[in-house]
Amino acid sequence: MLRTVYDDDHEAFRKTIRDFIESEVVPVYDDWCTAGIVPRDFYNKLGELGVFGIEVAEEYGGAGIESYKFQAVLSEETNRAAVAFGASGAHVTLCLPYLQAYATEEQKQRWLPGFVSGDLMFAIAMTEPGTGSDLAGMRTTAKLTDDGKHYVLNGAKTFITGGVQADRMIVAARTAPPREDDRRHGLSLLIVDTTLPGYSVGRKLDKLGLKVSDTAELNFTDVMVPVEDLLGEENRGFSYLGNNLPRERLGIAVNAYAQAKAAVQFAKKYTQDRTVFNQPVASFQNTKFELAACQADVDASEAVVDRALEAIDRDELTAADAASAKLFCTEIASRVIDRCLQLHGGYGYITEYPVARLYADSRVNRIYGGTSEVMKLIIAKNMGL
Image (tube, rainbow, N blue to C red; front, side, top):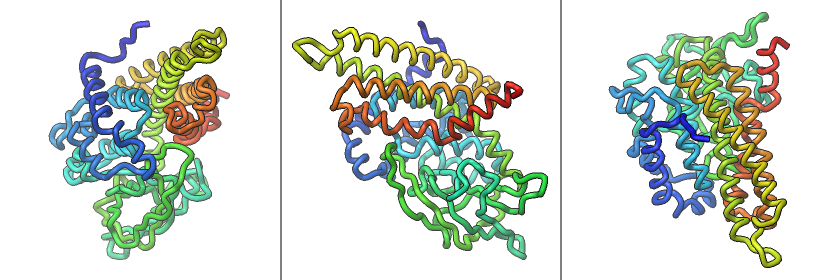
């Protein structure tokens, strides 16, 4: 079917990104995987390319385009080449909406130009050891000093994407204890300069996949955060976090769809090139049936993704819509990529083959941004169950 979600501007951006990947990423990607991180100056290259500023207003150095579709194109193109841009996704998809919605004009002037250029890389720290999806149970505290000029930040975070190289960290912390009738009360968001004394990066976590995306543990010991770096209003952090979850989950759904689509193309090419019993693997009926079933799944995911992309650009994407898209696309991707790896035989298990990287990278889709089980709870609640 003809895909109508993108226009000429999106396709021009697609060509720019595809050319950039071929020249700047593919030749060095194996080195990045071995190092487990992208070079810091790579983010400045993305800034120069305009990737970070698409949705940022022109007065801060951006393009001022209010559309998520360019980020979707980026996901499609990186997965098409079986590469990743490090923690840049967290920088834009996770962090930018908070700065856009809750930063003061003075804060935007301070942070957004560096955000756009890649000079200030942002990450967000929510998850803590032992709390997982229960954000209301977080124990990291930010207590106001007697003179009211600083928050004293203490605690620990884990699974923080971009945690190693971040210049500014959006930290969710308790500025007040929870109420008996509201465990969510008392959370606030602070923009923390990662060079402040007492801020430290712990282990760089060795993950199953997403090898070039640095993921770390963070520790805060009496970090003095200026009150001017409070994001939004004090004690309203939980509602802020909830407001951005639909966008975050759509991003995961889009990425899962793009991974599945790429896996089918890799499997198609491999089975056409690979000869067994004097004939291409693609000529066997089982191969044709498997690839056809996978393509049908990808087509269904594409329809879900495209509907959600139109909804978010109209500001109509609900929490239940995003949960449904994430649940469907991530479950589909898991099944499709597994079947495509199987068609590669033993070579599918070798990491130099892109389908192996997709297999490892995609598994976390059903965990982060809210597990599949949490998505089902959200959808069920929306159904009145």
